[in-house]
Image 1 (cartoon, rainbow over the protein chains, first blue to last red):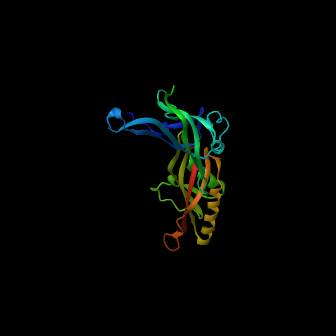
Image 2 (cartoon, rainbow over the protein chains, first blue to last red; image 1 turned 60 degrees about the horizontal axis):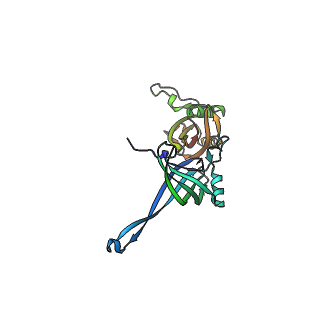
Image 3 (cartoon, chains in turn green, yellow; image 1 turned 120 degrees about the horizontal axis):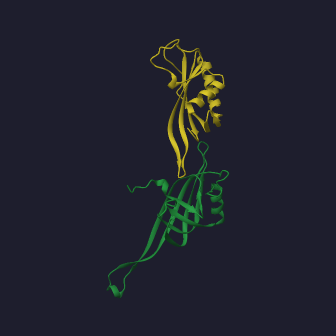
Length: 140
Length: 128
């Protein structure tokens, strides 16, 4: 018990998922600053500054079928957003699990890449970075 | 089911074809008139996204049997083209693509026996 299958983790942009996601990841890099002051008598300490969070999403390159527009973003939507510098309200984590803790904030696409060989179906990936303050919220 | 779909594709194209699983190894059946085809399907993988299972990847083998090596060679090329052209719903199975991967090469069990070749295809479907 307690183990979670990877498909439960996803990213939501606005109120939409990305169509055809095969895998995703989230990285939270915490910035800590070394401090040495007279209060702690020369003993080195660490002070928390902020967390820099990024996430990556790999997906099958998909167009949206009729009726999917309200639920999903297609691959061309992401290509356009990357090109135009769109800012998304983003939620990352177990976004469909009530009560799960997720990271929320505004995110931008820092890289979009598609792979379109002759033999396989096209795939693509996006790298996102949270911009500004983030918070941990609970899925309701 | 994909085996029924492959059988329909080959039969509709006018070939005497047999599903491998329907051949009873305990019965000593006479070899059919040549040329004929025997097909076998193997589920290799599922296509999974975070939305669930969205497809199935099969390896399909079609053994082509002919009395003349040169005619077998021509027939194999025809079967490869026929299979690669398959998309859409066939016998309830929705074909997304078929890719001809290659063949084993023409062989013969013993002198004066028919010639064989095994054609291998990658098939992706959206359902079983």
